[in-house]
Image 1: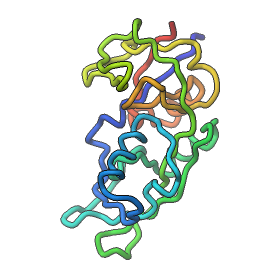
Image 2 (image 1 turned 90 degrees about the vertical axis):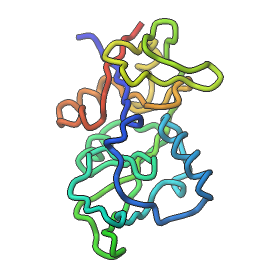
Image 3 (image 1 turned 45 degrees about the vertical axis):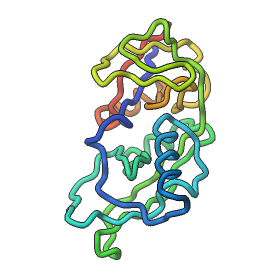
Length: 201
């Protein structure tokens, strides 16, 4: 069977935003936003820069979180998604405990949650063979919002190393291996991760 690499376009999706605010302010707001943008492209961060505790926004009552969600722009997961990720090669990345509490600052949100840290970068995007992608080699590329399966092409380099990674030329989105992609599909998490099939060229 042909191996399939997948691109997650989840970082581009506003619907996975969680209505919580990080409580752990370790850097100024602008730098935190820059860190979140770097993270959204599969960039590795010092774990201290990831969300550790967050409080529900006033006026919001969060009843359910997507299995992959954004908290102040950082990608986080539920335990169901974390269990799948743990069984795969995360490179130098990992999963870090995330405490979510209600707006009273005390009542915990039921469940276990984790901040996702990426740990690998590859150079596998094929610009020449990709469609519906915009950007510049010096500033990074992103898939267009209307991009679809098979628009993005990668080289066989994508099949080597970690099962989840950012690409040196992609500034929004991250990739998963055939093995991890199959596991996410089997667990019913492909839609939660907003996976887009890539061509290997």
